Image (tube, rainbow, N blue to C red; front, top):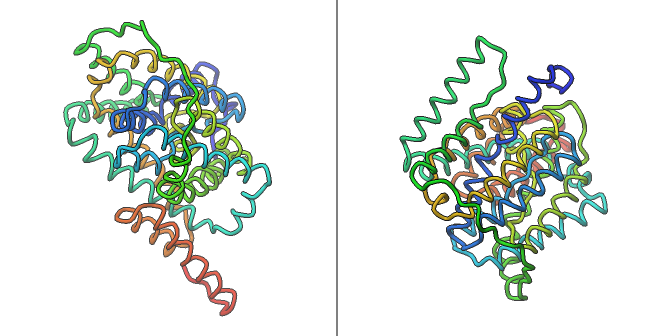
Length: 376
């Protein structure tokens, strides 16, 4: 039975929300830091807008609906060192499309078109991609801090086998990472913080974003950020979350963040699984997360602190998130479709595997309708 806020006493619930507030930082922080390095975007501004939307979503949804970067856009931007204005253009485009899909109530129709097995495949494929990114990009380059992080997770696992306490491992890992940074780079100065300015992409930026970034991102947004998140809300909280509502907030988040120096943001099943995995059950966790992100934004205004952060802390958190997401991805009755998407996502990416899996699912659905036989 999904846990609810009423089942825990107030002090325990408070600690659980605090622990779960940073559960998705293993996804949010690596993406934003990598984008900052590869594309020249200001890390403090990106963290600031993430913090703002953490707080707004916590108050609006009252459960830990995640706020995280648009992953396909982020991955391509990192690989190709895209300019900030192109990234802003892509965020505006995705935001406008999602907003109007939500306003006109199209997500429930899209949900009928996209079978659950496809959504589960996206969840499982995303778990594989997170593991593939974490091991060479964060874990292997920093085995020392990765070992420390694993030790923290195992310690809390053993403690929770004997005592009823919230899982504070993510919070401790993040705290330890910044402690290491302070030891090597000194304490942050908090003397400067960038002021958000209006970003107006050119027509050429919008064209590039439409051709390069929009096609791989939209399938991810419609499935993982909206439909899979809505489905996972039902799995974890035994309540229904209208996907059109999720689509509208993604639209507003992406447009506003992109226009003022932030990175376009969305929701995501992986982020929801991460918050839940570390103890989040209500909107309070997102308010805590927003405050933490504001603090990190202020700290990261000092470049020396950013350069001294151990990247191993991000890698192990990505692995934990992937494991939690995979547990929900395997809740499928159609292993053929789910498996095709998950396996093909590793060499070809989620956009291609999603399209192939969707075609297979539609073919099977048509065959069942005509022939009357059910294929697993």
